[in-house]
Image (tube, rainbow, N blue to C red; front, top):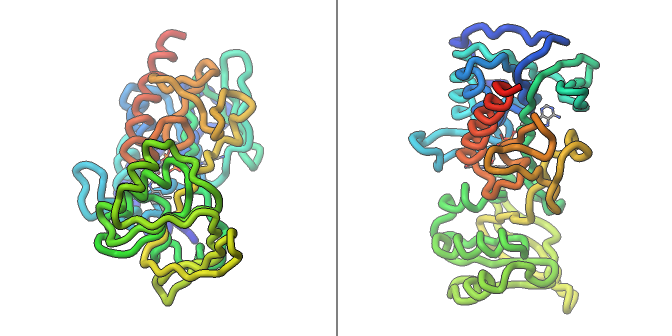
Length: 324
Ligand SMILES: Cc1cc2nc3c(=O)[nH]c(=O)nc-3n(C[C@H](O)[C@H](O)[C@H](O)COP(=O)(O)OP(=O)(O)OC[C@H]3O[C@@H](n4cnc5c(N)ncnc54)[C@H](O)[C@@H]3O)c2cc1C
C-alpha cells in the first residue's frame, strides 16, 4: 500500500535537498511523531538538521482515527500525518524518504549513516526514532480483519467498542490492564491466553473482580472469523483439546511490541524487551546518540508521548552540540 498516496504537500515550502557527505549538526532517523517533532524543535533551535526515513508518518498512517491527541478532534491518521509534515515543511527541513538507513557507525565524534543505496550522511549528533510494530498473533483472518474488528491498541481503539463484546488476546500486564480498562467500556470482555497469566498479581486480582470478564487460559486462538467485520475467534482449549468459537465484535491483540532496534542493537544498551534504554534527557548509553518514541523503554506507546519525547531528544541534542 502506498501510504503517501493522498498526502498533498502542495503548500509546503521547498525543502533543501539532503547533502551527502557534508556534516550535519543532527540527523534524525524516522518520521513518525517522534522524528517529526524532533526535527521541528531542532530546526527552531537553529540546528542543521535532516530526516532520513522510509514511511512518512510512521504508524500513525496505520491508524484509522485518532481521538486522543490534545486539541485535534476527529482526525484520521492520514490527516494528522499531513498536518505534522506540513508543519515541519514550513521550516524546510530536508527529508530523504526513499531509502532506509542500513548502518550507523560512530567514528571519533561523528556519526556516519549508510543508506541502502550506499549514500553516506554524517552528523555530530543522532536521534533514533525508528518506532515499533505491534506483535501479531499470526493466525488466519488476523490480517484480513485488521481495522475491521482486529485492533492492536486498547487505549486508542477501546472507545469504538462501547457496549460490545470484545476479546483480548494475551496474558501479560498490558493484556490484563487492557481487559480491565475495556471492562468499563465494553459489554463483555473475554481474555484468551495460550498459557497462564504472566501479569502482576495485583492487576490479576482487579481483573477477577470485574463482573463482565471471562478468562480462557491455556487456550490458543487459531483463527479470526468474520463476515466483512469480525464476528469472533476459533480457539483450541489445550487442556481438553476441544475447539470453541468465542463470539465478539472486537479482538484486541495485546501481546507486546517489537521495537525497530536493528540499527543500534550493537551500539547502545537495550532492555530485555529490546527497547533502547534512555534517561530523562533521552540520552542512550552512546554519547551523542539520542532516542525517542516507541523504540525506547519509555512506557505507553502513544502519539502524544512519542512527539513529546522527540522534542526532548532534540533539545538534549542541541545542548550536547552547544557544548562540543
Ligand atoms: C493500529 C495502530 C493504531 C494506533 N492508534 C493510536 C491512537 O489512536 N492514538 C495514539 O496516541 N497512538 C496510537 N497508536 C500508537 C502510535 O501510532 C505510536 O505510538 C507512534 O506512532 C510512535 O511514534 P514513533 O515516532 O516513535 O514511531 P513510528 O510511528 O513507528 O515511526 C517510525 C519511523 O521510523 C522509520 N524507520 C524505521 N526504521 C528505519 C530505517 N532503518 N531507516 C529509515 N527509517 C526507518 C519508519 O519509516 C517511520 O517513519 C497506534 C498504533 C497502531 C499500530
